[in-house]
Image (cartoon, rainbow, N blue to C red; front, side):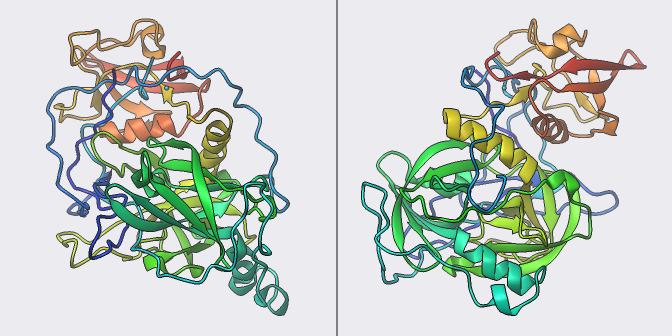
Length: 449
């Protein structure tokens, strides 16, 4: 079996503000991003004990059973929008530039009046949230207009479980009652836990997790409502640095909070989570204010389309949990193109497929690039027989120095780069062997194949 543990230089803290008397539902999330040249790494604080850093190689296969349900077609979207066996080919030994605060699970949502719940038949007991005045009194394309139209489709998730309670955010994906959020937001519910979805107008509806995936930090919650308006899903591939964006969610339990900023970087590899539940995100970086509780909420473009799902924040170097656990102008969102693919899989099968190349990486290697281990942790071949890397001629001890022409300097960067692609994609790796470099191509397989 594959271990998903990814040791790192810094630790993450779930984006959460704990109830003084309870444990946050996402306690223990950790993550990292790659170092920037010429500067000290930023550090990140975790909600919970720091995990030991292993020195053994970690497997890139196998991890997940094969999926047989179709995943090519996207389910019908709502009225307002169009809507890896192998672990991923590699496992991370190093964390990227610094730790990030992963998970925006906030403190318990303050009690509020319930104006209605839905019955088992799915018929709402009260009207769905409606748009605010800014939708008509402010020009199209302004923050006020977009916020007024989007906030009715953004929800707060109250999660309770054996380890405590907390809150996070989510948004309406379609008119069948599917809510998209982060895996770390709902993971605390576990067996026997409870998820309450609080709509923008205060109505509370029971929610059920129908699929979640720690690798991409995404989950889908189902509510018995068919009158909720979905947010349109945009294309993150069209986003460029400098684009204006809007974040909506429930930071610190304050629902329907809107903040604005710009896209400050793209393709930022971040790995929030703990050893056994690491996430790999080729993230959109933004300076829009994001705080504990924003996790799972949408990042919108200036057409009101979802171009990302807020998932992690960074803390200042050397800061402690008590000194810094909120926004410092560096937040990270899962790109909508990844969201689109994964959510379709979670709705149709309850699981997500991860692209893999089928190798074990040497976590103790500190030279240039990423080295394939001499053998797996249990003595198995470091290159999975019959896998993509094997078919392309890769061998134990080869060093991968670039992926699709882009240099990779740490295990995490390669993992994130692979997981950002799709099963069946053809990719190119530049490898170094015995002092010589060459390019090889391979077709990514899915977990379980």
